[in-house]
Length: 439
Ligand code: GDP
Image 1 (tube, rainbow, N blue to C red):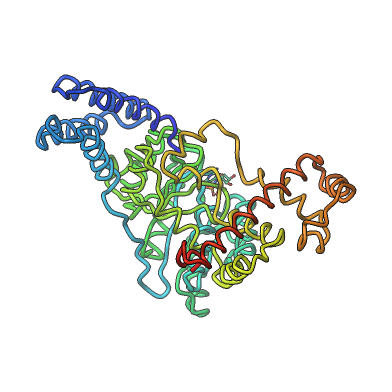
Image 2 (cartoon, helix red, strand yellow):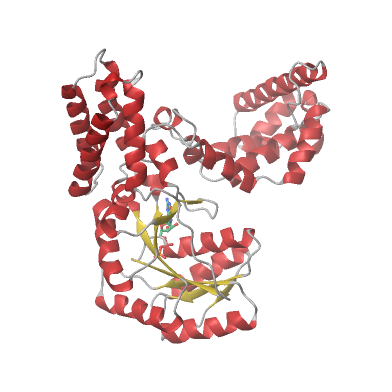
């Protein structure tokens, strides 16, 4: 996410950090480079100018030149300005009403249906009774897509495939939701490839008919300024409440994320970073500014881990680790827990300094597949006690998992090292050297 912008901004800061003495001239040249970096990232020209003018003024007002750590103070100023640019604070979604009605609008392919499913899953995890409504009357495939998602996440989907009146469908859905005591309905609407009068009128009519508590507009962040312009046009008609940015995982530049709030004056409420149901986060402008400046986002990483982690599992694992009984079954279930947290490359990008380091490395959740295959090709006895895996067994496992003996050997070696380290930590903990490391 935002790799190219991160690179360019890091380049801009270099000028300032490398200098012994900071002068008005090198502040001005750094600001100019930041402006260029923002414009290369497809940030609206006016926005880029305004934000860099403010950075320059702040640098003067706060006497960057005589600061103890001028580079650091300057970075902080930029961080604060980027945070303001993206809206300052995270903005909540209004879920008042029974049921609360959330209307989802956007162009075809922007990620509306995927987001509807993710949002439903997110709310369900918070104990809410959710219903999804298939309001796309033109593409039968869209209805099926929502039904498949609903099935996957265990959320009811209301659809009337024969009915060609979207207003009618949503009103019927609302009645049904009320009778079933749902807390929230999420209405997925039809999109078009480009801004289209008929589509806009239709969403407008649905909005009038059901009076939603929240209207969210979904945009594909990879389309940069086009995304911002589409949002602007829609907002003039629909007056939506918030923006959902999708496909940030594939967005190296970040222009939409940085300009949409300033141009449309509506907050970004959610961001989507992958195709899986877990790849959804509340949009926090300050955390995003940190990521853009290459400082990572550890808070979001911990939140993801908390959401994905099963507490009972964690306790069981903790006990096994303390008793030196951690085996390959546990290792496999750990890998599966990590995968539940979402896209691995995106997760690693949340670690400070890591985004840049892994930019060109090809890792995704499929990278775990060979390891999983090796463990799955072992017998239960072998998983519990890897010491019994001798030469012939290694060969059988390699054949069974479609990997090489070398890969099996590597995994066993790494697992052995991990076990040794756990033993050592247990010993240290026993002697009081590490305190209560495992809680
Ligand atoms: P809709 O036409 O607006 O309902 O769009 P869909 O929800 O069908 O999404 C279009 C395509 O984009 C699908 O292939 C989704 O899997 C994909 N998609 C949606 N959100 C994301 C995202 O955040 N990241 C990535 N990489 N793909 C996404």
